[in-house]
Length: 497
Image (tube, rainbow, N blue to C red; front, top):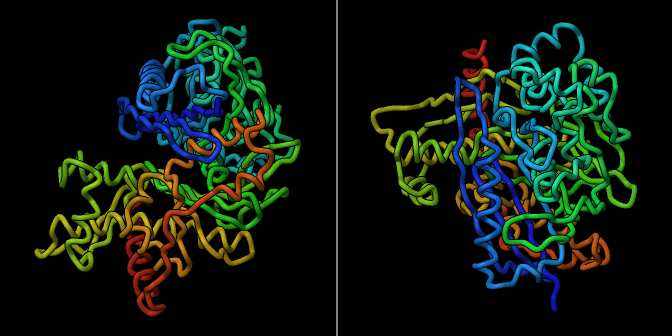
């Protein structure tokens, strides 16, 4: 019986379950969305029970779609939206004491600003590779402990459990295994990036009791086995656990130093492999752990644009320009250019390299001639402009020119945006044959642990591209396009003050 892998990608707007075999052939893929909750301006929350339901439904339906018996699953890999912060009661029911606070949430902006004023950011960055920003889990967890009744007391008593999404899912899928791994832990502001352990000084700064924290294990670990998961037999090993963007880097077979990828999802996340030594950014990017395999830690430099695919969702749901997000490309390409319209999609602040948590979206160049098509085109161009800034900053930090960038995620299916991206960068964009490389990466790690693939070289040989986009824009035009974006960003910074 051929070995099959179940990969669960628990994302910001939905959960995808993927089943594939040793040749990376996808036998089934199902996604179930779940509600987003916005209790106040700049607050974003998820109901953990709704997330759990989406996971159960996705796994059930992908087994039906693939027409396989659940007993054929050899191992499970889990990847997840990172930084989203969960707090629940210890015990088999794993009852959440509050909705999860999502990575997009900005409620702890003032806390981060105060910590910066107190002079903490420099040493926090040295320990974690991160900046003091509401994006990360540390201040979110601190907020929960301060604002949920009895949370701090119960946490100190060992009655509560903290985790990011992968830890919560593992806990529920195994009946109580409380573990994480370095890629997710490196996004909490609580882990020392050099030794991949929770740091006592950081815990003291953010007032986090160590009793809350999961065990940090290497990525080549059997994290637990299924127990009581609806539709799956007990004792399937869960041998892949990794944060979504590091998982995409792994799924893109970016195993050597200097290889880069960008995932176009709700946000856009660019990541370059920097090898066994952490490179600390001078351009406001993040240093992160990619994975820890065989006792060897691999690091990366990462930059994130918070709103990319979510901007297309806004065109669909907020402006009602179309009923299906897949229609955006046809609308955008129905005009030859954006007619001077520039859209900076800062609908939830701006991440690297600007770090403007209170920034608002801005559209410039609107005239009587502006149509829905111009706005759609400007939105896709705005995504590409943001990613160009990330990759340009990465090249400066890494000290070498990036030769190409691998692309994945739902947005990578947009041919217009991928070509425009290559034009702006001046080097090729290589699209993966499997766009769901976020799920694929976790599944590959799961299969690597149980011996489906012998090593990384075997995985790299099996990896295939779907299409290569080569730059067609002349340098003079590229410069003019960049200046157009820079003027819009100048206006954003002025309005944010």
